[in-house]
Image 1 (cartoon, rainbow, N blue to C red):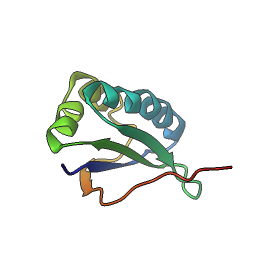
Image 2: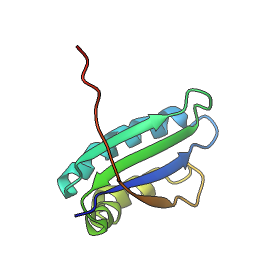
Image 3: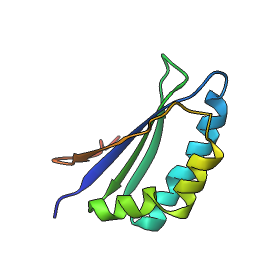
Image 4: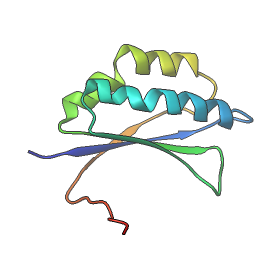
Amino acid sequence: MAAYSFHVSFYATGLRGDDLSVALDQLAPIASRYGASHWSVHRSTDDLYKFLLVVNFSDKIGFQKFWYGDEAVDFRAGMAGAFQNPVVYVPHEITVSGDAVVA
């Protein structure tokens, strides 16, 4: 069975970077309620208004249930004006993954 990583880019509007950071940090863990095996939020260190939400699901349907679920819809409505539109997600098929073991 294929696994998918969905990447959603956000770009905060003027002086809303910290607000968007907090909201994304609250939204991301909710993906696990919809079956996500991994979630993370990345904030650029070069451009503090640029964010990337990454969520991994075993199938595309799981992501769609999360993205169109009440919590994500409320996030997008509540944060309207805090980030530039359009917001588009990009699915990636995971071909290999791993974690380093630190001794």
